Every structure is written in C-alpha cells, then in structure tokens.
Length: 279
Length: 343
Ligand SMILES: Nc1ncnc2c1ncn2[C@@H]1O[C@H](COP(=O)(O)OP(=O)(O)OP(=O)(O)O)[C@@H](O)[C@H]1O
Ligand SMILES: [Mg+2]
Image 1 (cartoon, each protein chain N blue to C red):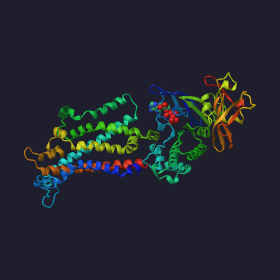
Image 2 (cartoon, rainbow over the protein chains, first blue to last red; image 1 turned 45 degrees about the horizontal axis):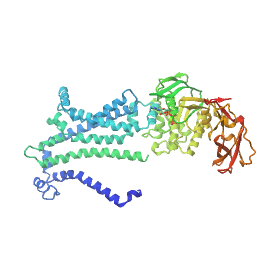
Image 3 (cartoon, each protein chain N blue to C red; image 1 turned 90 degrees about the horizontal axis):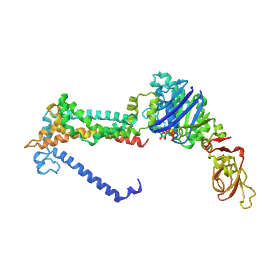
Image 4 (tube, helix red, strand yellow; image 1 turned 135 degrees about the horizontal axis):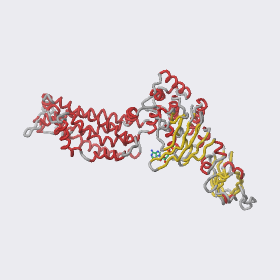
C-alpha cells in the first residue's frame, strides 16, 4: 500500500463516506426485509424495530404463496428478463463488432444512429409501440415485452461494447483469419471471451430496469397469464386497503432472482478483471 | 517454398496515400527484410501480402499465381505478429494445430507436424501450457511454431522481436536465422531495426514514405547507397553528412562519411601544422561514448558542425580536447541537391 493511502485520517474519512452511502442505499431494502417478517400490527406500531418472538410472522409470505399465480408471475419475469438479456447481449455484441471491426460506408453514421437511443427514452414511443403490438397481435404476450426490452437495452450495449471491442488486439483477429477461422468463429471464440467483463457490466445495466419495470407490463401485457412480478404485486395494493404484509413479502421475494443473476454476472466481472491484471 | 511478386502496389486510407507504387520480387527461398522508419508503410505492405488488407491498386502473386483476391487462409502464407497474437483459450499444442484443423487435416498429420515444429523450437515441455503461462520469448517461439506448422510458401514476420528484451532478441534472431537455413523457405521480414536487417537478410528493401528507396544485399547497401536516405539509414552510428563546400568540394551538395572511416588526431589548435585541405577538419570534442569494443567521439568541427567518429578499442579522449580529423576521399559518398548519389 502506498504511503498516501495509509494515512489514518484519509482512510477514516473515506470509510465514513462509503458507510454513509451504504447505509442510505441499504436502508429501504433492510426496512422491507425486516417488515416483511412482522405481523401487520407490528409493522405499523414500530416499523423500525427488528422482529422479536412476539411480532415475528410469516403471514405475508403465506398470502403471497397462497395466491397461486405468484409462481407464474415469477416465471414470466424471469423469462422476459433472461430472454431480453440474451438478445441484447448477442445482438449488441454483434453490432458492436461490426461497427468496430469493419470499415464500410456510413459506419460512423450507423454508430450515431444506434447511440441515439441512449438519449431518447423508449417510453416516449409507448403509444406507437402499443399500436404496433395491437396490429401484430402481440398484445398480452411475453414476446411483446422481450421485443421492447431488447430495443430498450441495445443502444447502451452497442455503445459500451464497441469501445471494448476496439481494444481487442487486431493481430489476434488477423491471426485467426490467416488460420482460416470464419468471422463468426473469430467473434464467438476470440473476441467475446476477451470482452466478458464488459458483457457482464452491460448485463447488469440492462437487467435491473427490465426486472423492475412496471410500465410496459401494465400497458402491453396486463393479462393474468402474462403478468410479471412487479405487476403482480400490485394486486395487494388496493384503493382502500393495502395488504402490506403481502406487498413487502412479494417485494422481498422479487429481490432474490435479480440478486442471483447479479452475483453470476459480477463474478464474471471480477474474474475477467483479475484475468487481465495478472496476465 | 515459394516466390512472391508484388506489382505496382498502391494503398490509400481515405485521402492519405500510404504506399506509392511498390514493385518487388522475392525469389524462392530468399530472406527479404523490409526496413524503414516508423509509419513508412511496412506493416501495411505485409498485411497486403497476407491478404488482411486490399491494395487500392496493384497485384500480389505467390508462385506465379495471382492471389490479389484470395482470402488469407488460402494464400499459402503464415504470419508472425509483433504482439504474438496467440489464442488465449487454447494451449500451445492447440494454438499450433488450429490452422491445420481448419483445413480438415488428419489428426496424425497435425500431431506429426506439431511435434516436428516443437522439437525445432524446443517447445516440447510447453505444449500443454496456455499462452498466459508463458514468458515473452516462449510466446514468440510458439507464434513462430504456429507459422512453421502451416508449412507455408512464404513466411511473413512483422517486427517479431521488438517486444523482447535485448538478450532475448539476439537469441531469437539467431533462432530465426537457423530456421531459415533448415527450412529453406521464403521469408519476408519487417523491422525498423537495421541490425536485424543486416544480420538476417539475403536482400534488404529500404522503404521511406511508402516508396522503395533501394533493394540490395546488406553489404551492397552499406558500400553503395543510392541516396541520402539509405546512406543515413544503414550503418550505426549514422553516417556524417557535411556540406560539400566545407570539405573543399563545392560542386557537391552533401558529402557523407561513415564514422568508422574517419581518423582522429589529437592536436593543439594553436600550433597545429595541419592545414585545412580536402579530407581533413579541425574541431573540439563535445562528448565521448565508451562502448567497450569501440568508442564514439562527438566532435564539434569549425567548418562542418557535429561529426561522429567511431574508433575501435578503448580510447582515452575527453570532452574539450582539440582535435583534427581526416578521412580517405575514396570512402566518402557524394550526393547532389536532390539527395541522389553522384559517382
Ligand atoms: N487502418 C488505417 N487507417 C488509416 N491509416 C492507417 C491505417 N493503418 C495504417 N495507417 C497509416 O499508414 C501509415 C503506415 O502504417 P504502417 O503500420 O504500415 O507503418 P509501419 O511502417 O509498419 O510503422 P511501424 O514501424 O511503426 O510499425 C501510417 O501513417 C498509419 O497511420
Ligand atoms: Mg508496423
């Protein structure tokens, strides 16, 4: 460790700042978690206290589980997220490879066009998207959601990935060409493994908004059999009475799959980074 | 084993013309080295030979067959890159065998060729390792092995030694020379290091600014440079260039004298009996470099500016001493105002 970072004052200050930030960021999450295992009365009486023997209750989770469709909602969310993620990563990486590897007329114009989506939120086009889905008969299908989320995720993916693809050694790709590998083999076998950390980053960036989205499921796929978790949790929020136990339990449960996905990707991220460092 | 012939190769990137008409014939089994300063288009030319880049105009022929539109893998070439460019996910054996595997060569043939190459380069112990677990020199040997396994008509090397340290560079240079002797294959080799060029080449192609300046054997280029650029590029330390008028040759623009062709005499300037005749100058020593086997003396001459003198053996000169120098006019090169050699 260098002398500059060993100074006690500096390290206390930086830890204080990081701890404050972590507390602020984690507070709502922890609040949801502890209240999801308390009885309804306890939630309202002392929302900040930890559950004890008296206030502990799994009634929220029981309600959620009894509402048989919830497993289906989970499944829908997972299918939509994973399939969209796959499409975004595959097509994003392919587009990024083409843009960074091949010189063709209109290359930079194409890159600009693809990057435009970063600045313009896709929700502005909701009405047109809905018309499109009605016309193609895709309303109330998961396909509709997958298509929209793929479109939503692609611009940032292309933008970030083409930066990284530029850094993959030209010699390596050329060596592959001399050895007679097809462009697809060069892309999948040589380039993709080397940009794995970037892919993981893009995956995390893409996944969270898709999982959490309420807007497009509500508009494009509100039917019972295509509901996602975020939409499903709304049944417990009534106009007059809200079943807080169930809402909190549903929210807690819905964190689990994203956490798992996140851990998978972030492990890739770290192993990718260290692989580069010790090379 | 094969010949290579380039005709009228031009290459432009947008408005920038990088290669301005290159013609060259490489004979069967010849070792040809391209040298030139950074950015003069050596790598671009090599990539055009390999088929990784299309020439704007001109044609490439290997073994008398026009390959200008043939993809790299089918040209019968193999290339060794400056950055090694080994496949990180494959071990050494697979790295070397991949090219053959792509052409559906049988397992036995691949194994046989890989073991021959690995014996040639003493890679036997490393065959199971991955590129990340190899040292720089080992990686470069694997890259060379990968090229050998393909048994190409022409080997292409793009500055293969420039990422290695000095000792390893000499060792690998010898290795490449030995390989050329054993394989008897045609090699096109790019470098900006003139020592590499002089020691390895059958013929050297000196390039500058996308134009071939001179082609010839190493000693031809050393003894008989056609122009100022070649004269300055071949030889170390660089040839001294002085104004013709400074050495009593007002009819030539520039006179070039190699540092090793100058004699240095200590003198006391005041009672120097040496008069300023053609082929001799007086000046004072600015700086002395002791290299062990020889000594480079930097001399500030009254008439000619800074002159480098290379003297063999250990010499005791010091900065500030006054000297006179002389040289044999027969060993000097004369150039006209366009930089072209006058005989
Ligand atoms: N893809 C490209 N687009 C535009 N210009 C390029 C491209 N590739 C090379 N150039 C230009 O062509 C010129 C020659 O490049 P090249 O790589 O052949 O030089 P070089 O002689 O190999 O130099 P070095 O010794 O530094 O490797 C350079 O000025 C370079 O900027
Ligand atoms: Mg180069």
